[in-house]
Image (cartoon, rainbow over all chains, first blue to last red; front, top):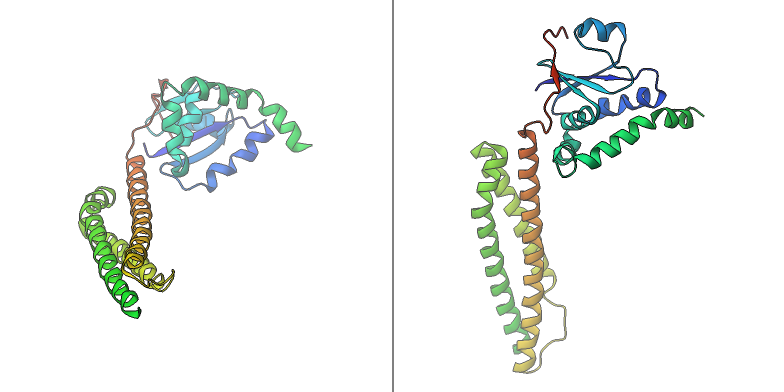
Length: 117
Length: 133
């Protein structure tokens, strides 16, 4: 795995803010963030079924990761957080990861409202 | 009376330096395999190993020489043994702490290197036939 394309919810202020965070991190895997459902995302992945409401990650082999797996594979790409991604990928921790990232995903509109005042 | 102090000092320095050399050599010999695994280059591993051992010597011998004059000076043979024992005990504790610190450094380096080569924890849910970029 050499590159990950992260398709985030472009309508969510919190997600737009957060896309700067992986950009600053030292990485094992090159990462590129694009708003889901945008023209450039559609051009890059014409076969991808757009689900703008959820985080989607596509790797350089065309593998698609959605929901919790998308968060986990993002962490996997970052040097400081790979350890956490391996932990979250473990069957023992997976339900916790699902709860955590599910809550983050569910609450993102609310967080955006708070952040944007 | 002075003779007790002087002889204890001599013995303390000799034993402390010998202990330091023993621990450093153990670290040097057994730490190498960790470093070769981490750096995957023998010359780089040897270089880091050597530098770590130099640091180890500097800190430990530094402590041993600095701590030489502290403590109540012995006036008889019994006190000389106590004085010597306390000093060596402290040196052993410092050596132990340094040794575990070094082990922690080695383990951390190795963990980092293993992370770099770890396979992804999740599999893709689906595959796209065509990826343009």
